[in-house]
Amino acid sequence: MGSNAKMMDAVRADAPVDEEDDFLPASERDRGRVVGLVLVDIVNGFCTVGAGNLAPREPNKQIATMVEEASRLAKAFCERNWPVFAFLDSHYPDKPEPPYPPHCIIGSGEDNLVPALQWLEKDPNVTLKRKDCIDGFIGSTEKDGSNLFVDWVKTNDIKVVLVLGICTDICVLDFTCSILSARNIGRILPLEDVVIYSHGCATYDLPIHVAKHIKGALAHPQELLHHMGLYVAKGRGARIVNSVSID
Ligand SMILES: [Zn+2]
Image (tube, rainbow, N blue to C red):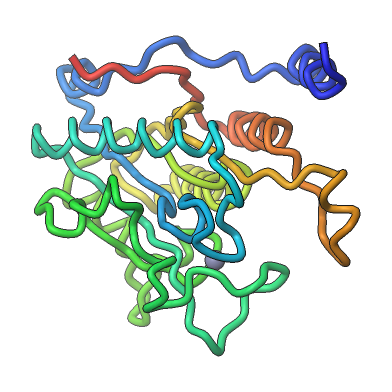
């Protein structure tokens, strides 16, 4: 067993996520709980090999699986006319987002959904939201004080959100923490549960042996940070599931 696998076994033993086995959106609906699908930043700049500063340098299994699962579930939801909300990280060239290098600049193509999800742009069941910050809940706040995500939950009478996307420990986590706080004080009605699908999430990989040669870089081991993202989300009150079945 390699040192990374041993380290992950120790982390999983000491800080287990205890994922739920199967999540069934159709049976939630049967119980009167509409499920909304939320896709976080599944854009070229984070997912497509070689697409930019924060895109994978080479094919990455965790990211590829996340895109496949997002595509499968988005298709299933839209076929049934169930609600879908998709965030797209999109930045203005003159507005940096430290500590990150320039990424997902509007018009670069990095800010567009990956090829497997581009059809979402024209699907009537989908609400798209471009955001120029990490936390999609904050990014959904409009100038007049309204919030597009809150409005989407209310309009569709959503009681459960199923969250997928990238990065597990950054945009997915920050969004999850914010909506859990907002839910707890009755700011997102009628939302009850926030469910994260583990294999529908991914994060980037910057191992220490690479990071130490890049000035100022912070190491970001993929398996560890993906796990910790799920763990922290669960600690804040999210449900974590390891599979989602539609029928
Ligand atoms: Zn960004």
